[in-house]
Image (cartoon, rainbow, N blue to C red; front, top):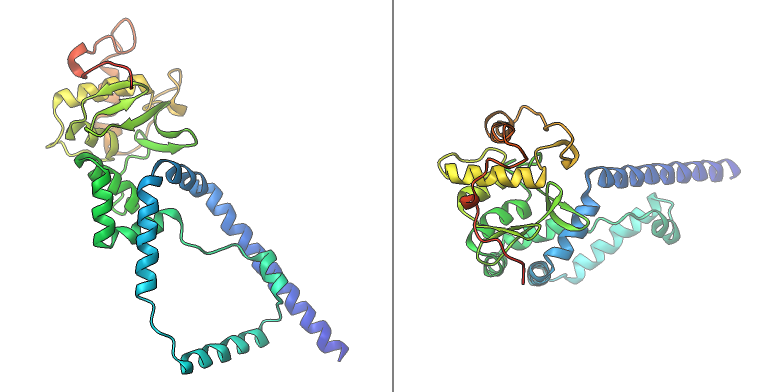
Length: 270
């Protein structure tokens, strides 16, 4: 009897250790990849879009839930009873070691975007170019299109490009630290895409992008003007970003070679 009890205790302890270890690994991965921070920023910035989408997800799940018959209930109870007999955990243990497997914010949004109602609501909140590029961010960059080296990223203060705040107005205007730029398809392509489509952007877009790089230091390590240029094997590094920046080095100051008409209206944000 004592031996059986001791064996049961050892099994219980081993399972608790395994579950705790899995919980720690899961939290470590989340912290390492910045998921927690990214979800907080997303929730703050996209709350007007996300909340209605969450409601759609909830309504869809409730509508699609099958009716549980008496037989199904009985079968489910028997299965739960068998699981309780096999696993010697009590409810208190479950509460202590439960990590939670609720869908992440981005997962919920992706599920909502799979419904016509979700897509329609999202499109109503975004301008045409915003629909294209924000969709890529929310859907999860499945095609590996987003530029993670020089591009837009999420930070605790909001959306950033380099060391400056990045925002988009309702008319597609791009706002960087109070500076307003005409949001052309080519400029969006250069800012967001890892491999920009050269059939979309123009020479004027490239010059505007050069000014943005020099303003934000997005092309430099740690987004610091005194640090060297970020180097990698990517298309943009080899073909666009450093070439644009090095051409302006001959000037007397950073950005001195940029024409004033390369970007549009300079004005304060209302």
